[in-house]
Figure 1 (cartoon, rainbow, N blue to C red):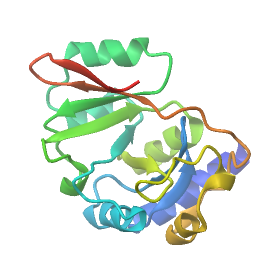
Figure 2: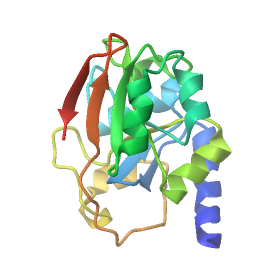
Figure 3: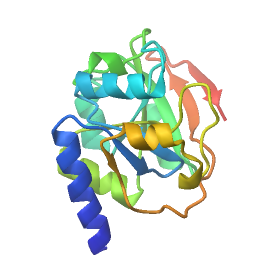
Length: 189
């Protein structure tokens, strides 16, 4: 537990200065930053060699954070989040209070509530959502473990979290898009 708190503190210090981190999530290893900092978000796009038109997921640690980013949340979104047994990303319309370059061109944002202790505690300290994108160069396979992360990614971040390095990741989250018009579309199972 002490190691967890120490890693949360170290990651927080980097993030509050606009840095980017490599960290374990409830699915795969992710590259992340403060989702409200456009310069930090731009660093991740550059590191991943990814077009800014390809949006990234934002992690949140609870209802309060979701309400801060979305004025309207369809009832079905709460039901999906409550009932999902596996990590599930939900794409919602019209986010606010996040960096413009993390929002998709169709004015949507993919979010996931995390229970994973490191991510949860880090956001508790940040009081802001956390960008999460897989730890790979765009177009390359998603690493299933820390050992599979390319040296380019490891060297390109400002801090590598020293937790769960032996963990083999599950699959990336399910992605469901919910429009304010009550349309539901499964993007990734």
